[in-house]
Length: 128
Image (cartoon, rainbow, N blue to C red):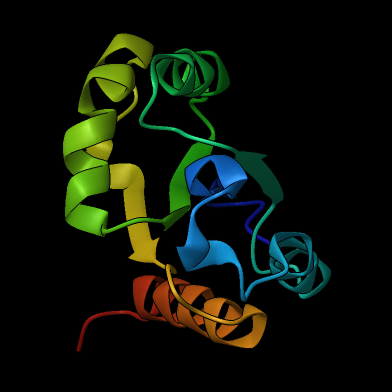
């Protein structure tokens, strides 16, 4: 993992767990697959990061997280994530540039793992 450069975390947001767009996916296996491969330092899950308690969760999680180099969030559209989480990031003093999102709705477990791995690989590949 990323000892010298800081920690990398992955959050899964699953639209309360009732949204049909997550029914083809075993969310726990998604987290376990990435955790086992040591692509990130920690994993977490929240049922609805865009809700008020999601803001509180992000603020508490990120407050004082100076060693967090990257926060990956797998859930809905990355553009929407940036808009929805900006106030929580600001309140926590977390640099929004450290956030990278990926849309995993309507994917199987394997497709979601692949999409997240691709995001991480693209994010860690040096620019040419």
